[in-house]
Amino acid sequence: MTTMSAGLLMSLATMGTWNQDADRATVIAEVQRLLDVQMADWNKRDLDGFCRGYWNSPKLTFQSGGTKTVGWEAMKKRYKARYQGEGKEMGTLAFEKVEVEPLSAEAALARGRWELTLADGTKMGGLFTLVLRKYPQGWKIIHDHTSSDEK
Image (cartoon, rainbow, N blue to C red):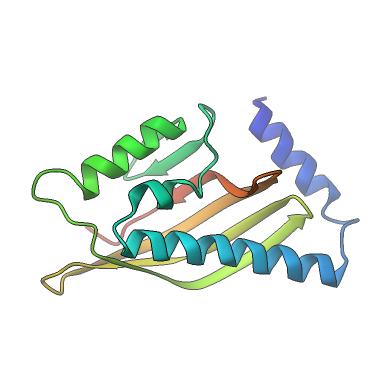
């Protein structure tokens, strides 16, 4: 079992005993704030800022389009090629219908919908599921599974 899997299982195991409304509200607000900052950074075309929301670790996992990318550097390289490469654009990002489910004071699950609007009005979007952990430097996404409505 990987360290991340063991950590997630520990978080899930403690879920039944961690139930304080104030702490839950704090986790929800902090995770939502992280996603709001990521969205703002993306819309300023600040890919470095956007990527700061992810755990800067070789163990970060990002799954999208049938591909698993492992590591922060590889994830950032993927984003750069897809949205800042020749003939590419970042567009305007919106997160919708975001649901944050605290698993403990230091772990959370977030689900929602992403939508990207390009300069010509073309829209693309899909669903995302994030696993987040709280570190001394704040909340970070440790696993991202993003799907696309594209056929």
